[in-house]
Length: 410
Ligand SMILES: *Cc1c(COP(=O)(O)O)cnc(C)c1O
Image (cartoon, rainbow, N blue to C red; front, side, top):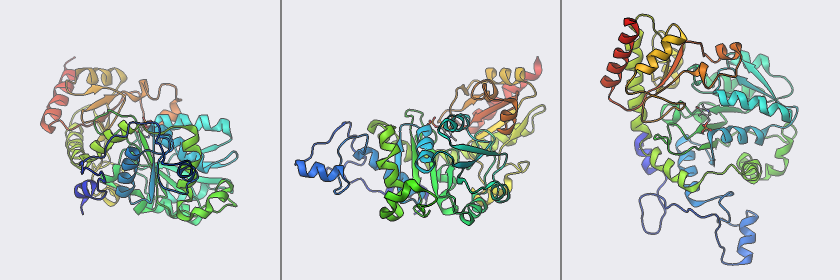
């Protein structure tokens, strides 16, 4: 099956009435037929549901679809992408552990690593995550490598094939936030990643109607209890050790579960992910090529010949570059004027919507970061991030053309 077929047909709805979509089980609790049965469910001795924070059939339907699509052995859905990142890290790390991370990460994730320092988790930031830089940064305390597949907003592509080699040689798991790439462009587990995370608030949902996240496990990493003492109790679960520990621990106990209704909205969104991504990638490339011809504007888009990441986009993403590009307008003032002149692009802090969205990252997401942190994240005073939607490409290009013409008139 190719992508769009597999999205619709890999996991079949199991509803007894044959409903084509999974029913929304909008309930907190599930009654068991007996006291004995509930005891079994509570102790993982029988399949079934007890309480939605620990599991829900609609949420489960979403988890199974994403796990199948990514080629993982299972998944845990979360209330947000940030909770997915938090829970995945806290399931692995303990005080004193180091985690190697990219400086080009999403602003919220950079902030999170600062918060985790209060719990003794030490982030080691690298300007670029490659086989060589990771190998050199690994110490006896390193317990994970965390990176984004296409950095948001730096738009650098991580060569996870070679980075995962460095991780394997040192018995360290590679965690990849693949939000901006989506399984349409790449299935990171097939290229060496051990755990994949999505903010499904973005492309997977598609219409920006549900904040949500998901953690998918490839089931390949060996959680040796000497290096990962928290896993000792879970080694009996074999390849399911990571997910069992997560679902019985941090994920359930911190309580960042996904609402059944939001899981349902994500299942609907997921069904058109391939169509939307195809369109967004095409339009983003056409828009990037158009903007590159405009005086006073520089463009960063990984699938452009001018991008240092073109080779990786060709090798890992089938030549596509995703739906996001950034431009530098020359000054903050010009960036703001460009944004304010656009008719079809909404000024909003989000990506992966059907609508085109624009933002000035330095003035918003990165306001409380240092100049050094901003530059490392590819954020300058004149940078505008564009998340291309599914509007007709000609209309988008026309809109940017008129906005740029207005810039030069003044
Ligand atoms: C948005 C985003 C997140 C956070 O997800 P939320 O659903 O907003 O919590 C994490 N990583 C990346 C790359 C993102 O774009």
